[in-house]
Image (cartoon, rainbow, N blue to C red; front, top):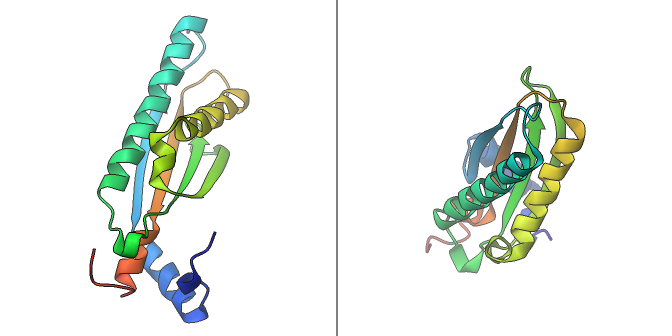
Length: 148
């Protein structure tokens, strides 16, 4: 879903510029330890902890964003990279409403991404990186409204 004001060419250019400046962008990363010596129970606990950590971060980031005229949508992207920085896999969860991360859907989608990570990683540790984009912050900066 693209909001109508984002379809205009001049607005599109302004949005690109704002994103490059970091407006509405929040980033975080988590280190996942080596899976070489982990028991299945320890591995399941680490995965569960990672899901909880990512979902908690998403919720905190969303609590800090502006919501002019109720524009509260976010775009979330996740990536996994190895120790050398090579991206092993990535997934854009698309544009969603915050309620997704207060319902099982958010955790389920993060958990699915982490299962993909397990499929592509070797036994070494990896880093999961998340980027969240607040459409409300962009709308506010574009002057759609000055009320937040």
